[in-house]
Image 1 (tube, each protein chain N blue to C red):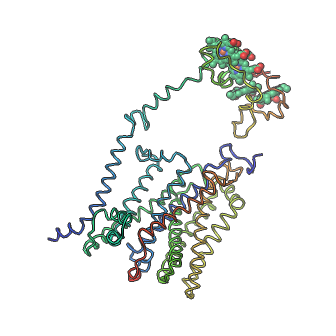
Image 2 (cartoon, rainbow over the protein chains, first blue to last red):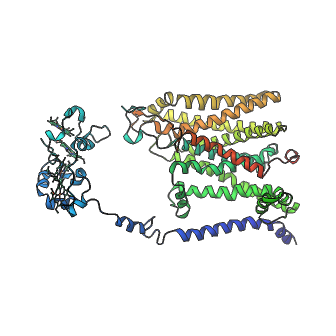
Image 3 (tube, rainbow over the protein chains, first blue to last red):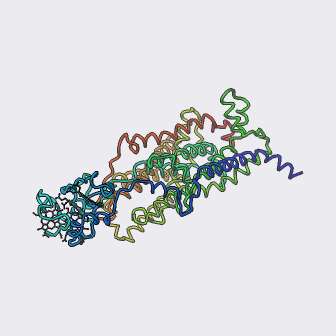
Amino acid sequence: MVVRRLFRDSAHLVRPALVLVACMALFLVVRSAIIPKAFGQYGHYRPGALDLVRQHPIAFAGQDTCVMCHDDQATVRAAGKHAHVACEACHGPLAQHADDPAAHVPKLPDVADLCRRCHEKDAAKPRNFPQVATAEHSSGMACNTCHQPHNPHL
Amino acid sequence: MIPGVDGFMYPNEVELQWSVLIVLYPYITGLVAGAFILASLERVFNVAAVRPTYRLALLTALAFLLVAPLPLQLHLGHPERSLEMYLTPHTSSAMAMFGFVYLWYLTVVLLLEIWLEYRTEIVGLAQSTRGLKRWIYRALTLGSYDVSPAARRMDEKVGYAVTVIGVPSAFLLHGYVGFIFGSVKANPWWSTPLMPVVFLFSAMVSGIAAVMVLYVVCMKLRKTAIDMRCLDTIARYLFYTFVIDFTLEMLDLIHRTYESDESFRSLDFMVHTRLLFSHVILQIFLGTLVPLFLLAANQLWRYTEGTRKAMYMTAGALTLVGIFAMRWNVVIGGQLFSKSFLGYTSYKMQLASREGLVAAVLLMILPFVIFFVLVKLLPPWQGGKAHEA
């Protein structure tokens, strides 16, 4: 008797509970429908993203490729302080050029901007990294009047 | 020389990443949590005197809660991506987990509590209104027209349980915001375990002040008498929470001063220069000491009704400004100094950009628009009943 009354008086409370359950069910259905297949297979991401990334055209050839044809510059560079600075760090991405050198002849880097990008004096850089206040150091002259880009020693 | 920068800043510190919208976010969630806790006073702690503001507080909480995520989404852009947080949540991300706290609080606590509270009116209106309104109310009844005294007693019991769950949920809701700042260990202005607690109490202070001001304004607009017993009680609770909040903030300050770690000189200098107006003048003096004094005076001496109203309103408005300044000082202040402790940048608010002043003002108006609609839909005034309790 008491139990029956309790049920009758709380019957209306079942409704918000149903709404909640329905919303949760809907959420789960939507979730399973839109979460990409195999999500989480390799980590907290969509494995298909890897394929998408692979489809991007390759921009950098990598310096092993450059060296195959530009032995001269490679030898010069290997002798100096820029030995560990990759060709394309200065020349920019040149995969197209490496594929077909005749069709894509690269523009040479603009020295006025290039060297500054790495060597401008900045207190946030490691202390032992070679850096100069370019305006004072070269007083407007192009860096490569004194330094050679491939082997920056004078 | 970069304009606005003094001394040395790392390159990524010159421009602030978190704009005024990120100031609004904790401010708005704070109002939600505070308003809800005021509502729970009546229900869980049986403070009958605040009954006239019970519904008002619930609707205020709902109006602000609905707006709370918007500043974040406007700041981040791509609002459609925020859904991913629910679809594929990362369990190690505090922000992702918070998405669920938000949903829980919105649906299980606030909406349910409001529904339970308003059932009699909803059923009544579903039968007495016409047209579109009738359909709205019919939908709101969820199909149940049982408002017998026995059923209402049941609602009362369940509502109590919901509020009991709601209080820790509200604590969680706002404690989290402080948690996010407090756990940025690289930033000495933020990184303190006291942060969630300070945020929580300042949330309660701002929420209570907001409901108090809203109550008086609503009554003035409706040309209805203000229940002074209610107003006095709210002001008293505002005073209590404010004292705790102020003590905690001072504790934090004393602790920082005493600890004097390597960041202290830099932060101290910042408080005395770039944050002088917003921190010392707005937050501490106008936003805390003056309202505390006004509220304390009311605990000590008796004033006439008119004077009390004026004092409460001044205290309430100043409190709201002060807590906003507190959020500002935390969010903006935390980005003004260099982590090298050798320099300072400045924040220049934009005007009509996505994260500018206009967006912020609109976002602050929006909850009031929602509040207005809610009040029209679910009138919080219960005629005689409001005052009988």
